[in-house]
Amino acid sequence: MSNQPVNKFKLGLITAAIWENNGFYSVEISRSYKNDAGDWRSTNSFSHSDLLNVSKCAERAETWIGRRVNQAQ
Image 1 (tube, helix red, strand yellow):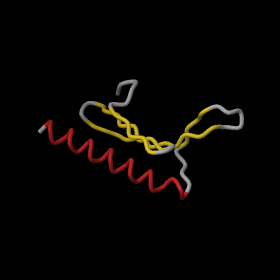
Image 2 (tube, helix red, strand yellow; image 1 turned 90 degrees about the vertical axis):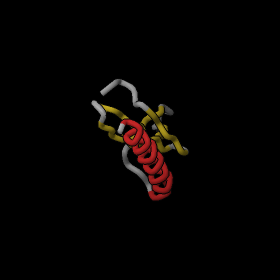
Image 3 (cartoon, one colour; image 1 turned 30 degrees about the horizontal axis):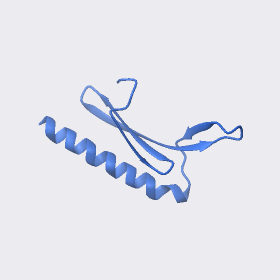
Image 4 (tube, one colour; image 1 turned 180 degrees about the vertical axis):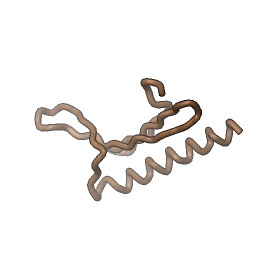
């Protein structure tokens, strides 16, 4: 696995990062937030209001991966 994702999808504070490892893909979904000191951090915990963007990012990641897999065949 490389140090950088092969693609990212971002909606609001939600990001889906796609990682490739020997032809296999994994997706990491996170939410950005500012801590009390004002520093940007990320979490893998989501509130109800985040879930629509989580699902949209997941769908975009699935579509992108599907196209890559189909191109490789």
